[in-house]
Image (cartoon, rainbow, N blue to C red; front, side, top):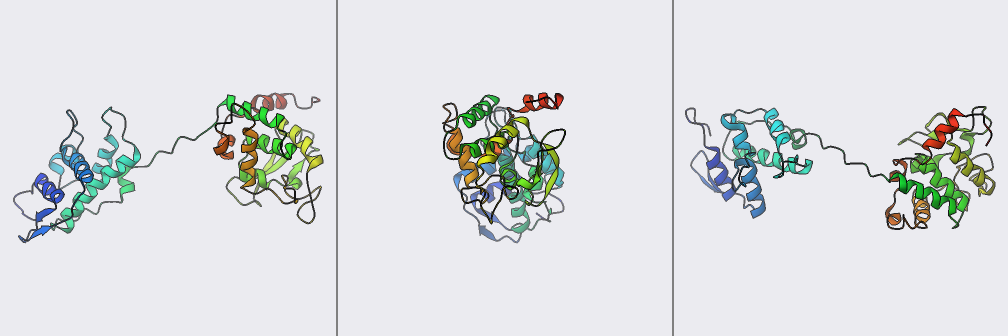
Length: 305
């Protein structure tokens, strides 16, 4: 590796490395790592195109060419970003990461076992590039309409509470927000209509946002729930404490709240299949069935209901 006159052959180095037998610069023969067949094939393919399918020329050696010993980290990033599957679709983030690992491992072998100068490559996650966020799971508008219908028709335990919990989630509140809403932060006497201060998302229960109008359908559910709200001292009272309460007067927890939504969803024939695994966050991120009604109410504020 240190010869000033002749560059070493990367293909020969790769073959010896994958075979688990190579010769150090001092002439010592070394029995190295024994690779499993899958890793041996994958590294050979990605690094040198060994056993590549016809027309596949995306291996590292072909890409980098004469810069094989004089590349920059940006070359690895660019190569990884260009990799595709056999059908031409971009390589998934985990597969890009494994490709980068093959390059890093090869040069680590050259450095540690063959005495090459160090390249000081960045971590794999940097070379592989950012992992695109997974597509957010949502319900269709048809499914959110069905969930609203299920809440309206629900006759299980505490139906008014269940309807309000579902309506709050359909209005876009995350479960942590819904269970942290307190009665003190609900204002019914504003001229523009009822408002509330919602807990900030992903924050402590004590962090609240500015006053926001309560969607009209949620107001209807709220009006039905408040007369039967099970407040009990010292945990809650008519004018204080969590809005959504258990039968003991305590606020709902993060286990009970999703169960309420699933129980409601299970009563609708179009939601039975997804009900057991339904998550409040998925509902909150889905198209709200209240959007059009809320917009109409805002335009005609002051009209009687």
